[in-house]
Image: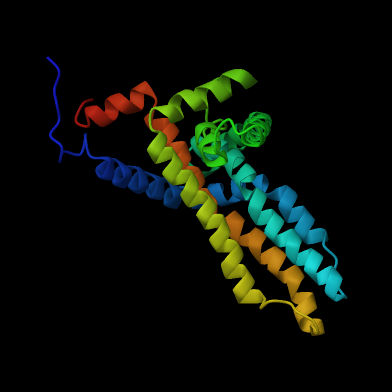
Length: 251
């Protein structure tokens, strides 16, 4: 006989499900804060290297270009975050030691690079062709790095299949991730810079490089949270996880 949950029960309440998701992800983030931050640094290493190699601007034009580089990094941060989801997926299962979590997460993260690049290409092409809004495509493919499926097409299909079953939650998490990226950019901008306008002082010009570096450091520090949220969503879709949630007293 089918059992119908009451509208206010935790099973049927989207709000309760969201609270459970956030609580689980926060506990995972705090438990594995060190390995997740190391994995985040690896995922964002291309941006970190670029920020490290930036020369101090000496003219107003160079300052404007450096400032634009910082905002460009904010706009593409989601790709590194999708890769980081793969690493975070290794920490959503049974408890591990910190070293074991770092090792397993590193392997998962490296394995997520190519599938996530393919997902990014699909998101870009789909958005340009007006197939679906970019945010919806990103939500559908955000779990590519965390997919246990092997092979490039299967990982994309798996992400879409899982995301479609909980699309409102996926869109909410992805929008939150993008909002976090924008907030990092804005806070870094107002903390380090004020609008650089002519005539700019040498200190204002030099500060634009600091702005870029602060953006990268903040992205590395805070990106594990949305990545862990997405990895937890993927974990909850696995049959073993679903049965544990349905029967918390079993075993």
